[in-house]
Image (cartoon, rainbow, N blue to C red):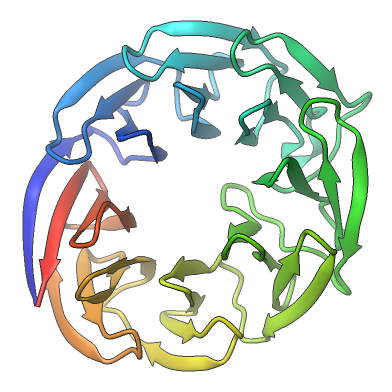
Length: 320
């Protein structure tokens, strides 16, 4: 296995959030700033103040949305220049951020605040629930937003423009409760993975069907790579096929920190800064250390991945 760090950008902090969209990588830096980079060469497009330690960060239609802890605002930035398009004042502890083409949804984190929706271009408020609600991070699916109620197995499809909700279905167990990780993970155009309290489930939003995929579930969200599922299992990582059947078990050098697919195979990252290259069947092709710590990885193209480290973000080329 051969790896080459093509560029690296210092963040001067432990990077807490990042988002990739429309050919732009936006990442938190220096506690109170957002930096927009060209993911292909690391060029800085803009660097602006945007509050501290965001609850959420996401790309919208020609924009970047950030939900900082302080100030308690939802801020919409122009994706090209980083200028503020609009901002909306919110109640303190308004967590969760979900962006669709027709609305921006916030709120429901830990049951502290109502859910509120805003028009993505103008920032006009579209609707708000009459009281605080306790939900896991909502998930955009088709023309709706999936919302899982904390403490139950109920999943609803919410119209992002009107707030009207329809019951999709109910798991036979409560959904897993996360503070800062997703309970829904996209598998493909028809299926969504849903983390239950003790098992991993497959949901088909179109007809509300649930199917248990795996009982070997230790609480952290799955990662979908090339039609397969990486499931953190204690210190190990379990590789499942699309039907939930185990394919391989891998023991990284540190805690599992994510996975990505490249032309050469699957790349598994661990918390101790290593990248391990595997075949789609789980066979090991090589391992290299590229950073002191790795927090997350994601695909850039067929041969490169983006790596979020303890104090930097980088692009790494992988080949055999």
